[in-house]
Image 1 (spheres, rainbow, N blue to C red):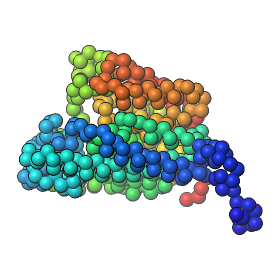
Image 2: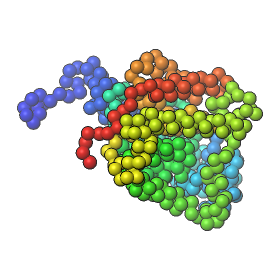
Image 3: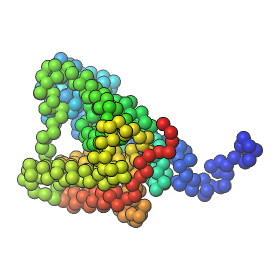
Image 4: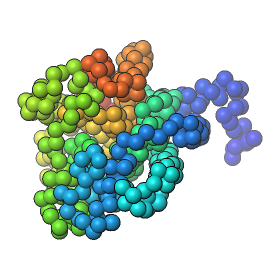
Length: 435
């Protein structure tokens, strides 16, 4: 085959099988083929999981009970929305999402009256839907990696994204809202990397409306909006996020404003010690204490401030310099996709490191960022990278309930990655492309 100028056109297999495999693993120009193969394999694996591994009830029935209130009993007071696991603690987007799922899977009677056979059929329908959500999320994350194409991160790193036992469980066996929230966020992130800031903010706000952990990305998003759209653009896009939250929550707020605010954004919530993944080596009285909560908050804000001033804005005069230029109207830059991605993922990871309590479904908050962030520091030995991935997967996927050893392992892995990110070269802030 010849190209337009008469020269032979090189194909994937033009130099043999070994060369083709090498291209798939190391050349971003062939990443679409690798991504397609990974998605096909993921589809087969998810189908096998649904057919072969029995479903175990955790939160689905409680979700159904919580969303029945408004749509079955016409009760829009958040105080009254409860399930077997306790009161509803998610924003309004969650209610609409799972009410839609309730109808699609035909969970039509109230939960207390549904028969076991009908429940089994409905849940399996839900599993197939979540398989689709999972595959769409994987495709979006692969698109994000492809959009960034960082020189220090080879394409084969994307294969790690498909290896987590716990992540497959969160989506196709447990049907948690965490997975849906993160898929919406990754769609927003891909839009940000394509400079579709307002469209991205729409999906960011929708993700927050399903679960508020997405707010861990908010400090980085605010910084990026300032740099990319200026002060006025940042305010406009934040207003878009706020309006979406207002519209989604309006029926509940009109019924009882404070019941909705306190219920859906329960920032002071104290998690149960028996479910924590990250603090099992502490005495329970320390875990539930306000001193631990305040200490973690202080550390979170301190480390976030250090990264923001010394890593994300140092070459541009620090946070103060960025704010001054934004206020003066001079801060409208075309940020590189790699800079956007690194800033957002690092910001969220810092939040996870200093989280008050992590539960098993929270793993999907940052799993997809781990391979990318681990390869940011080219001097980090490969054996250390492998041990971090194995340590995290062992902690999250193969230890239930958590033990002091698994919690300590989690913190060691987090510390290694955090230090590695601090020492890694900073990605280029700007792209050379014209606006």
